[in-house]
Amino acid sequence: MTPEEKLAELDITLPEAPPAVANYVPWIQTGNVIMTSGQLPFVAGQIQYPGKCGDDVTVEDGYQAARLCAINAIAQLKAAAGNLSCITKILRLEGNVHSSPGFQGQPQVLNGASDLFFEVFDDRGKHTRTALGIHEMPLNAAVQLSVFAEIESE
Image (tube, rainbow, N blue to C red; front, top):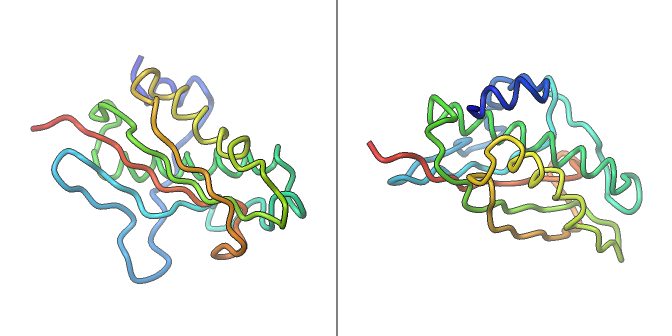
């Protein structure tokens, strides 16, 4: 089953790849690696789940925010590769969780993204990961993540 078929099975329609919100590009390719810029939990141009995990945002809502970030990252990968079947491996997920003082549930929050990559890409979705808690986040988003993926060589 292709990644696109898995997305359909999960009832996920990829949005248009979100544009950059400042002076950077949403993704870049070097050799066989595509790297996305930080993806936020945007839906139709609006941040979902604003606030800090452990305060305004529960772990469960943070999980959903991370899942939305992953959907936007997959949209970026599709924009870069043209076809998600060209993705041979999700190499790395770097996640930042907008955290209140003392919050230590960053790994559980970022599982929202990791779980989706496993669901969509199967074994190709297994990746390394960094889960960091940060004090402030752009646009008050609960989560931001970047993805590194390998694509087939031409």
